[in-house]
Length: 273
Image (cartoon, rainbow, N blue to C red; front, side, top):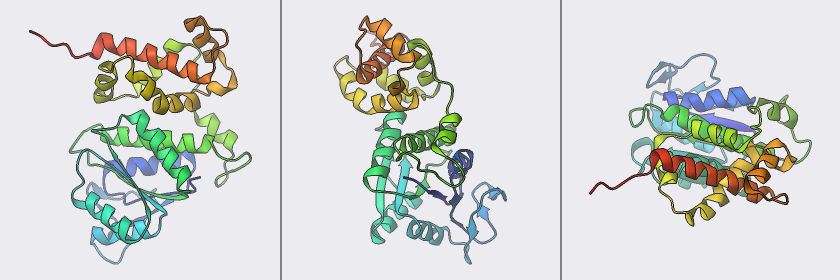
């Protein structure tokens, strides 16, 4: 279970990850070049990063990796520059490594993959390095959303009574948005969190491909909407499917199918002859 988040604070995306750590009450840290220099100016004082005695950002990347147990690299396409350097240094120092290519992986699936990796590899101190806003102006919000979802999913699978800093598991549940009461409300929330690319990908899936999607997106839905608690959303899923004995996995699929049907009306690619 995560106990601390590390970031280099260089970009708005890096700082967005630190904001998520602060929001959820996780301790945060990291190393930054001398003078608290970033690509966006001087790093604000609210971020508790330490200055290196050098202005060489590569040295900061390496130190951040050495201080962590795992490196999460979120990218669009092939790793280059600082991201490829982070990959090489992670392997050099024998830390755990996970790369998420957002050209290949939708956001909800990414959150579940990150959560599984954190728990499988017992990551407690996580270093996150993400893409620049030059690639996508919304990437800061997108990256932060993925990391926040992964951290919440990780927390939900924590051992009973486990707490981080001054927060208990109950405190974190209270930070979650209100649980939707109907399938349509759940779909509205999912769509509001999706970027255009992910909407198009799901809209153009076949019905058969939804089964595979349920293994990743389904896990996200089950946890983030707390379907295990027998709430009103579960009852709505049973009503929609006309199945009074519908279980949690079936409820997740019902939400995914409704999401798919709605996106096909708005984002399905049509070939014009």
